[in-house]
Structure formats: C-alpha cells, structure tokens
Length: 227
Image (tube, rainbow, N blue to C red):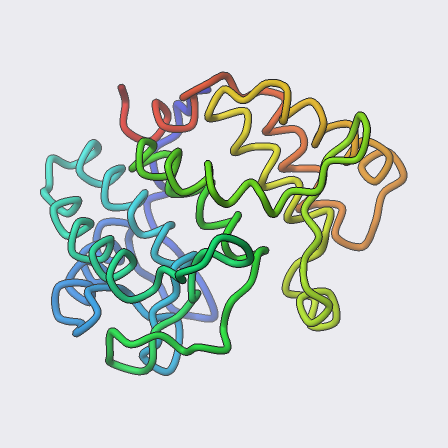
C-alpha cells in the first residue's frame, strides 16, 4: 500500500482556506494545550476515535516535514489508558469521549462501533498495544459457523452511528492488519452479501471491505510510519 500524492496545496471548505501544514500545526497546539491532551471536534470533548486520526496525522506530518508532533501522542494515549478505558471482560472497551475540558469520561458514551473504528486506526501507530486490547475485545465478535460479525447496540443502529456491517468491516480490516487470517476470512464471508447487494451505507462498508482485501499484515502501519 503506497500513496505517491502529497497533501493538496490548500484545503478549501465553506469559503475558508488553509494548508495542511497550518491545520496540522493548529491541531497539534490544541493537543498540547488541552487538559485531556487531545483535540476536540465540538464542545471541548475529545473522542477516542477522532484522536486516533490525530495520532496518525502527527506521524505523517513528521515524516513529510521533519516535525516532532508525534511526541504529543503519548500524552493522549495516557488519557485513554487512565481515564477512557472501561474495566470489565465484555462489552465496549472505551468510553469514547471526555467531558468538556476534562480528562473524565462521559460514562454513557460507550459503543462497540466506536471501539473497533478506533482500534483499527490506532493499529497503524501503536500496533502492539492494539493487539493486546483486541485480544480481549474480540470476545465481542459473534462467530456463527463459517461467518463472524460484530453486533452493535440498538441505539447505534437507530442513531446511524454504526451498524453490524460497518463495525464488522472495521473488524475485518483490523484482523487483516494484525495477521489474523482465519478471523478475517469469517468476517469477509459475513460482509460479502451486504457489499454485493449494496446498502445506504455502501460507500463506507464497501470501501472498508475493499481495503481489507488489499491489506497484508502490518501494511497500514507501514503506510503511516514508512517502516
């Protein structure tokens, strides 16, 4: 997996214009200034899945421009370890957001769909830690004969936050990245009918399904880190 295309010269959105370097610098500064060491999408709440993207961006920016932004990643990961990881043997692993300008979690915000999205993205930056997390989390995967899938909570489906198919597609990519071929094949067999039939969320599910089929163990991490 390789990309020969650097960031676009400018990012244009809703009449505003910036550069990738300026945007990355601004987000990195927000991480350093925030009490929870993360970036916030809204209401000063920092989400595990959003900051998983930030961990990746810091590493990529360092590779492209020789900065040291990834040094801030450890502080956010410490927030996840200390404050946003749920105890217990089953169910969601993370509280997926902090309270505003705080390290304390929002207790009601837990979701398997958020977990698996976050785990796949973080596998590119902290693969060993994700491997440990996933070893316990995979008990949430339902194996039924030749297939396997993730069953999200009803509220995730009703709010269109996630779905069984979308969460299973993230799990498929993660299993491929971690080299768990047998699990990946079971998840792929579950996803195939949905992808071939199409759905309202087809661009997301089909895109992850295609990505999973192209992933070799560790390929996503090498794409991000250059290793």
